[in-house]
Amino acid sequence: MKEIKLPEQNENGYYEIRIESIGGLGANLCGKMMGELGIKYLGLNSASFSSYGSEKTGTPVKAFIRYSNPEENIRVHSPVTHPHILCIFHEALMQNTDIFNGCRENTIVVINTEVEPESIAEHYFGHNKIPVNRIVCVPAQRIAMETKSRINVVMMGAMAKSMGFVSLENIKKICEDTLGKKYPQAMKGNLEGIQRGYETVREIKVTSSSFVKTDNRIRHIIREDKTDDMSRKYMQEEQGYDNMPIGGINPNFGNSVVNDLSPSRQGYFPLFIPERCIHCGLCDSTCPDMVFQFEAGEYKGREIMINKGLDYFHCKGCLRCVSVCPTQALVQALESDYDKKPWFVPNKDLIRTPDYYEKSGADGFITSESYLTEKRIEGGEV
Image (cartoon, rainbow, N blue to C red; front, top):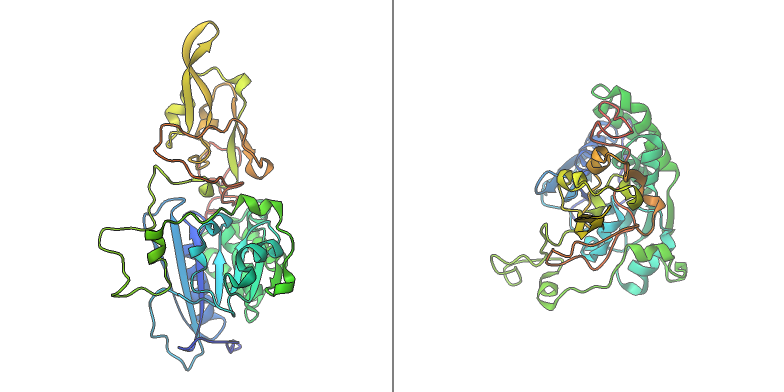
């Protein structure tokens, strides 16, 4: 094994990576593999761990990885605050710019997005808003679907290319070591996903001359900062005795009433074809998220509850409604084909709806239920 010397380290002698994701995209396992990679194939000392709350699709997940040269022990086990690599598994996470906290002039930001890096750089990092070194974009969502792999392996390939001291071969080896014996059927797609993630990156060094007019598509993933003054007071990089929130206050509030679940979709969504609908209500009874919006109306001369559409803010893409619909009034569709969702009706009974809407949700080939058209490869969920 050829020993790697880290190209740069922080004040403690570490090279640090932070992964920002949501549950279901494989960030936890990605962090584990990246940690083992350092020890097994790079000749480095390494440490990794993840941070998350409830283990369910769509909830925030962070993974932290530290490398050090062999002569330097890792004695810090807190979350990574100033990453050399910040890897963002879903573009919707950039709605809250707190995700970029701790970025420095040497930080490389790797993002799963179809948006060009020039547009990302202009909006988020221009005019000294947020200091970073490079923006690296990779269409991991599309690659994962085409290769029947997952976003996490595609992003590993993109991170390896961005880091510079990690070879493609070593990334493939750690994937085979971790997943090969347990999920041999999924290995071909996973290795292809890594390869394409490595080869497909588009990057830009952030300088004042690198900015171009904002791509129209970026407007789907940004929104105005409407943080109130009380929340803003606590949004600082470092917190301590003087500035910690008073007990019981969570400045970053969120619950099932205000959450937008669209990032948890797996690349597909239920497309409503109203002329086929017989308003039987089976979709509403099987939906776990109160997505379908019914109102009193008339159908074939009878007064019944009429299906008016879907609340895509709260649809997580499980497609149970597609499975139970007897008339194919709900069909599986590729979300990236629909910039605007037809028959989109926000749930008016909820206290508050989001002030933005995401163009597309999290993408990966994995489909977790057997009733879907695409049958899951055993072990394909990575």
